[in-house]
Length: 327
Length: 256
Image (cartoon, rainbow over all chains, first blue to last red; front, top):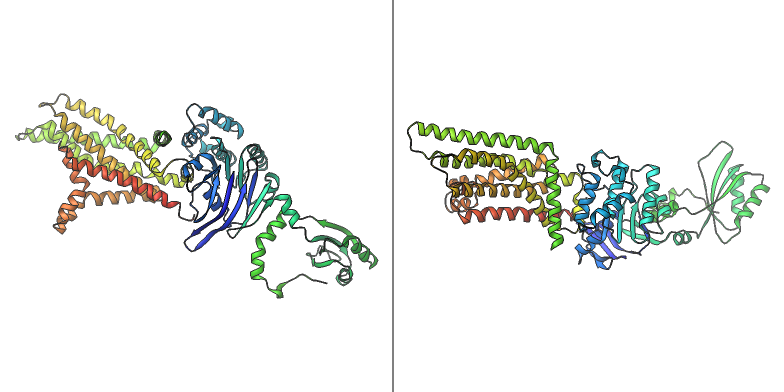
C-alpha cells in the first residue's frame, strides 16, 4: 500500500534522506523512529506530497507521489507535527472545510464529518471554536482532519505529542482501530509508543534507514549477547576474579555505587554458554553476598540506542576512554 | 475540473466567512464607508461651490469623476490591509501544509483567496454605491450611465490588481505587518511610475505610462472604456496570482 524505494532528499549541500527504502501493507502500523533531524518528517512530507524527493520513488495506493500528485493527495490523510488548524473556525466547520478540500461530495460530507467526530471523541466540542480547545482536543481535531475523507493511507507525525496519559491511550486505540483496514505510518520520539502501537518499525538515523522489520524480529536480531545485572556485596577484586574465571563472560561494567559495600555490575556474556549458574556458584563460594541477579531483556530503547549510535561510535571511538573491562 | 472548482469555492467560502467573523474587517469597513461617503459629499460641495462662483459646470458628472479619482487613494490605503493576512495567517497557523497536501493547486488556492477578498471589497462598495445612486438619481443634468459603469469598473479592476499584488506579498511575508508595509511600497512604486518616466525622458515616459496604475485608472474614471487599461489591470491580476502560486510552490523546496 505504501512503498518507498531508494528515496533521497538533498537540500543544497545537506543530505536529509539517503536511499530510504521500506514498505507498509494495509492493516499495518509502521513506526518511523529516529532522533531529531534524522529525516522522519522529511520522509513523511514526501509521502504526503508536500515535498518532492531528489531521487527515488514512493507509491501510495498504487500511485507514484511525483507522477500522480493529486491522486495521492486524495488518498492520504496527513497530520503534521503541528496540527494545521484555523483557530476562528468551529471544529465541525473546519472538518467540513477539509472534507470539501479533499473532494468529498456534498452528499457524503455530513456523514463523514459525523464519523470523524465520533471516532475522535469530538462530538461534545463540535460547535466550539478551535482556539478555545485544549492542546489534547486540538491534536484530536488534527487526527480527525486526517481521516475525514476515509483515506486508505494515514501519515501521522508525532500524533501523541503533548497529550496527557489518558489522551495518549485514546489516540493509540484510535490509531489501532483505523489500521484495521488502512495503512498507517507514524513517527514518534516516544519509544513505548512504538511498542504499544506499531507492528513494524523503521529506524532512521542520519537520513538512512538503519533497521526495518517487525518489532519481534528486531528484538531477536539483537540478542546475540546476554546481559546480567548483579547486586553484590563484596570487594571489587574478589568479584572481578570470579568473573575472569567464568567461561562465556565477555565484558562487565560497574554501575554507579549504591552504598559503600554494595555494588552493581552489568555482565555481558555469550548467550550459548551456561553462564548464569556458574556465575552464582563462583561468587557464593568466594564469599560474595548476592542480593539480586537479573537477566536483562533487550528493550526497544537499547536497540534504538545501539542502532542510532553505531555510526557515532565507529567514528568517535577512542580506546583510551573505554570504561569496560574484559577478562 | 469539478474538484478544482469545488476547491476554489471551499477556499472562497472559508476566507469570506473568516472576514465576517473578524472584528478587524468591521473596523476597516467602518473606516472605508466613512471616508468614501465623506469624499463623495465633499466633491459634490466643491463642484457646487464652483458653479455658484459662476463657472459652467456639470456638477453630477464632475463630482462623480473627482470622487472616483479620489477613491484611488482610499483603495490604495484600504486594500493592503485586507490582503495582508491572506497567506501570512496561513503561515502563522501552519495551515499551508494542509493546503499543500490536499488535492488543490496553488493557483486554485490563490484564486479562491483573491475572489473572496475582492468580493469583500465589492460588498464594502454596496452602501457607497447606494449612496451615490441616491445622490445622483435626482441630478440635473442627469448622469451618463456609461461614465458611472466604466468608472466603477475601473475602481473594481484597480482594487483587484492591488489585492492580487498584495496576495503575492502576503505569500512572501511571515507577518501581516511586514506584508502591509511591502504592499504599500509596491503599489506606490507602480502608481507613481509615470513620474519616474517624466524625469528620465523618452523612451521611459511611454513605457512607465503603460505600466502606471494611476494613469490607466484615471482613463477609466473619465468614462473611457480603454481596452489597454482593462488589459493592464487584468495583467497585474494574473501576474499577482502567478507569482503567488510560484512563491508558495517554492516554500516546498525550503528546509524548515
